[in-house]
Length: 219
Image 1 (cartoon, rainbow, N blue to C red):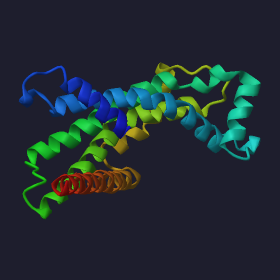
Image 2: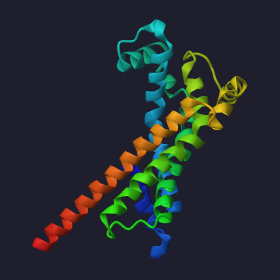
Image 3: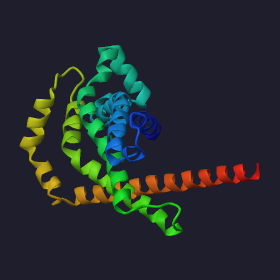
Image 4: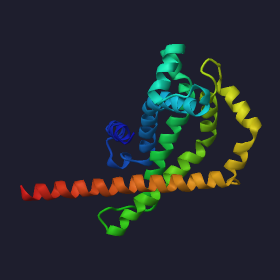
């Protein structure tokens, strides 16, 4: 996801002549959305298999590969794409918000990696905020996707039908209002996990850049 976002960002930046128009939060959002679209092709089938293993306990699949083989053998390869459309609807905005929010937060905090060591705290904070924001906004569509992929493979389940069932259950209203301990715990986990991800990546890239400059200075 990070590689695709970075490559897409370079392509988007190349469309602009002025430096101030490059590497903006909006450009990161578009690049993240492209990354999300590519991720959907991977996450769609893999999450379908994971969900089927969790709910079809009567099948007693040995592992993920066994589950995938069973689906293909009984229903054809095309059934591995069940829920792919709704996965796109989740991943494209999720990754767009994820990367866009991270860069926007860094801009608002006036992040300068060359100023002091304490500046490295900011990528941790922006990463955590990005993870929480992305997860929270895309929680409703994630509920629908999980519902669609949890039913039997042969059952046709539209996004509209998934929405109606999740809506009628009414649980997500309490979740979105942060009135459930599960939702609050999930957002805290999202902050911690993504804080570590972006913060560690920032430190790693800064170390690599310092090493390259050192090598250039020696040559």
